[in-house]
Length: 313
Image (tube, rainbow, N blue to C red; front, side):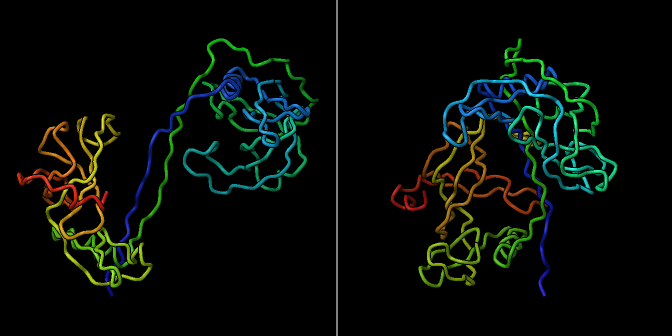
């Protein structure tokens, strides 16, 4: 039985977004230990605030402060916190309707165990010691048995407002390729590029998918393509990626290998970025011990005619 391939993969990038006036006021308020909601035309106060009424789609701008105390409306116990979650010990995820709000806010509740959590319990915000205008300025919720806290009446006007946020996005998973992908990866270790041919339309797919996306039938006939190919489309990368030791600018391209009916992607090297063009003929460059080409370089052949690759754009 062939070896089942698997590998841990991480997809990670910083997600940057600008803020409109409502979200800006909300996050700036958290920095100042103030929770703001937005009032709708029918008198509801939405926390967290949104820029448009979810019922009427009306634009919302009427900001109003709510209390830092509230009531748990529902909850779930998290017995094994993950990296980056609010607390590093077991805690409860809770929906809390803050006093003065008409909707509930999702956050963590610091509790000794699931027996200490119940719907209807009273809680209050525990603020982070250092705050910068992000949702984690609320460190978590904690139990509260005191009198209701009156909001201070802030209306969303702050100095030095937060205008944008950067949120790290990360996905950790284990990838296990199927039969077709495993054969493709195995061939790459021998510096060969292998795909599969559809028995119906006869198209050759590299990398193979195990089935023809056009005809919907299974593919099993292996076909070796390349190693040379043609640049069909490309982009110039001007932003240096974290942990990627490639100087910018550089070119990433879709490359139609000879004998393939699907373009794969790869980096173009051995040529200035401003000389890369559609139709450029290229070949793979391997490095010692690599399981895939490091990049593709020009072969010196005349450019391919557009008619020969236009269907692969």
